Image (cartoon, rainbow over all chains, first blue to last red; front, side, top):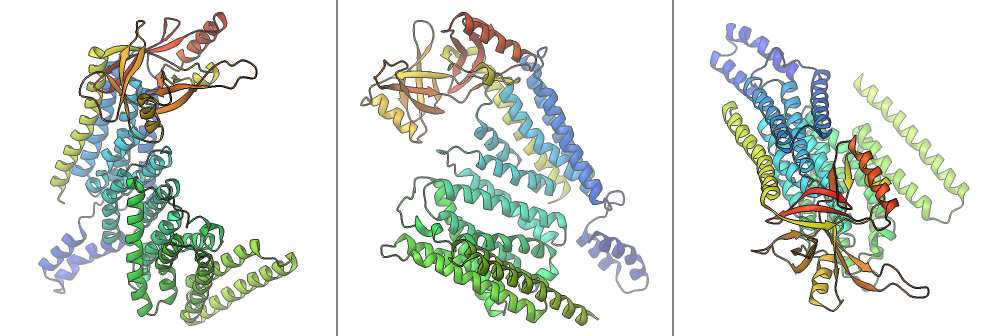
Length: 438
Length: 196
């Protein structure tokens, strides 16, 4: 993208000179794409990674030096040191925003250092005053104090660190803790991800941020859904959320070839959906859903259910649109959200064995998903879609390997046959694609 | 957002971050200077586990001997089941903290601390054939670490081990300052000797 902008900026004077563009139009283009800092715009991934890694190491080193708990330093001196370290990180971040706004390396490194410095400051205050025992309160304060950093600096790394810290916090919650603010933090941080997806859809950093945020929300929701008394909510949340991600990455049809982030997000999301869908093909996954054990006092459970419902509504709307546009495989994947919500509702009311329908329905769904994706991939000569379909079928066959009474010979032969079929389909498809390209 | 607006917003955020850190420091300093002093016993710990090099795992707790049917016991059971609760503190003749009340909103007056955990207290020693009886509850708090220089921690470990060898009932306690719901450890003492 930057290479393209660099080329365009090089061309603008000539285009103006030849009368192809007016000076105003050239200026409007410059304004649209923003300034290109000659020193930093070409900063390679290596430079950015080195700068960011360096910032993290410097931050970590300072934390360890202060954490040595110097005997000679009194409490006030240690407190002053903590505040000075935080102020230095803030000064660097403000310098990067004010003086080097186009430098990715400066932006990412300074912002990552600031995120680390805030956490270090809180932890070191806790150490100085021996009140550092509550990990939850430390993480809560840390997350709220850095949630706005990505918005103000535009740093992907600061945002990725935030999403990682959120997982660390929720992963360490005690059994009796179900705070609502992790979901508020998600709602506060998510618009930055959406903003990046719109502004820099081609960038790998954007795709990584999208994957990190989706993974973080998936883990946070799963922990809340799985640990606080609502049997089966984990399945509703996981399927609805991942189906919504698949839907977002698949809509509008054909957009994945325009916006690389969609393709990069779609593949892992599709694989996670297949894994969760496969788990739901086992009857054990549905056995406890009808047991009434729902703790509505915990706001985190209510919010998780609401997020799952919102994802299911979104995925269902996109399912209909994808189906109308002829994207049957993507529609089938996104339809899992509606399916899991309906089956969960039926299983909750079950008094006559309706919950048996859950695992049967997901067997059929996984089979349909695989078949539709293979057919669509073969007809459109899309290797990725075909392989996603084959992955769904392979998962279904592997799952049934564990709970069928067929002997090992029959099951082994079926595996070998399916594996050979996968190879054959891929080779055939690659030849067709090459022939079409020629 | 323009660069200047972004910088102004960053400055505001920086002030908030520094303010949060400074407010914590001021609160803890104020507690240490003018908070009420209590002694809180720390659970007997295995020295090999407790002294990790950078901090001592102190596990402070107050034992509440209460009949299961009493109001105090019922309130502690509510905290055990997940409700947030606070204990109002009073001092016994030796200056050790005892629980005078359990409340579910921070009280307007008196020294109090938020409860981190409540667990059951059973009779410590039983005769052969006798089963342990439930005699009350232990209330513990979030300040469960006493930070030390990494060189001093092994020396502290050795002193605790020696004290335990000399006297099997060696007592360890924390000197804690309490003010406005904040508890800050002032010192760790083993048989009356401060550990630093």
